[in-house]
Amino acid sequence: MTDSSSMTPIPVGLDDGYAFTKIALPDGRLIAIPSRGRIGQSGVTWVHQGQQRIFEYETEGTVYSVGAVDGEATNFEGYPMSGLNRSIVQHVLQEAGLAGRTVHAVSGLPVSTFYRKNGQLRQGTIDKKRDSLKIAARPMPETLPAGIAFHDVIPEALAAWYDYVITEKAGEAKLDAERLSTPVAIVDIGGRTTDYVVVKDQGIVHASSGSLQCGMLDVKQLVANAIEDRFDLENLGEQLIAQAVDKKAVRLHGKDYDITGLVDAAKQEVVERLHAETRKQLGLGVELDQVLFVGGGTVALAEHIADWFPNQAIAEHPAFANARGMLKYLRYVCEASNAA
Image (tube, rainbow, N blue to C red; front, side, top):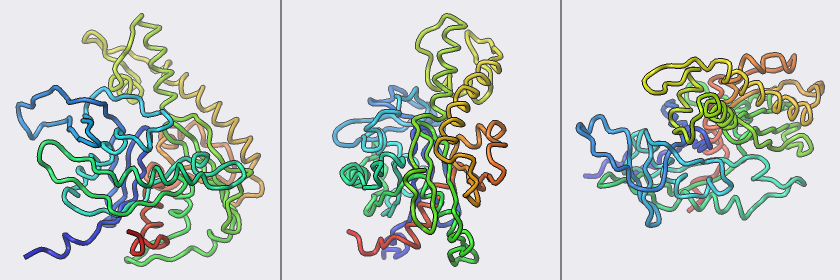
């Protein structure tokens, strides 16, 4: 006898970013993995399967390795529609225990990828992103995939606005009337892009909204360049650089070297670019009730952005604000039941 609960589609908020892929689930779980993978088999045999850290997925005839690999760069134009993206998304769904389940998902695109400067939709790009994640990505060798039966796409920073205005209590959702009626700016500092969305009277103000191609992946690249220069090295692995940025130390030839100065200098360079663009987009923010910072970069750069506006705030668990908003949009705004 089939368990009817296993037939019910699982709603998922899916923030498949260039640096991290994050999901929000209706049971309250928030899961994040690095957006790290590459074409080809892993070439690793695990002595103990329970210790497996690299996983393989096949999509459209190509095999991708995801997990503890030196990942290929994700900061290219076609990443949101790529087999690499599908494989990483499938991996986070597997990590969430959704193997064999049907999934309804909402994901996002950067604001400038979603809208033209005049506010018109980039419908072709949106459709490509929507259709891409419906293409199967199969775990190898025999695990059942999570199947994405419905997928909608919204602007990434706008997803955080939905998280801000839709509140949940005791299993019920309601719109916060005060937050809905006041002008607010969302600043979403991500991996490849920093997005700006200003919402006033429930309308997007396109003159103050858009994207800057700058984020935490730029910090990693600057640190990589600085380490290679200081130690006269070439082609350091992506995992080593990620750990070096997190720990402000790099391990080379079995020895740890302090690189605090290199990491701080890289962050400062990126912060200066972000601050200039934020002033360009939002000015001093005098007509805004609140400037809300979200995204993984907000966590990493919190001390650097603490005093940009007198009316600023950092969202709760800011790295997951988009994923939470995507889930709320799916459950309370989007008519998933009417989509096929």
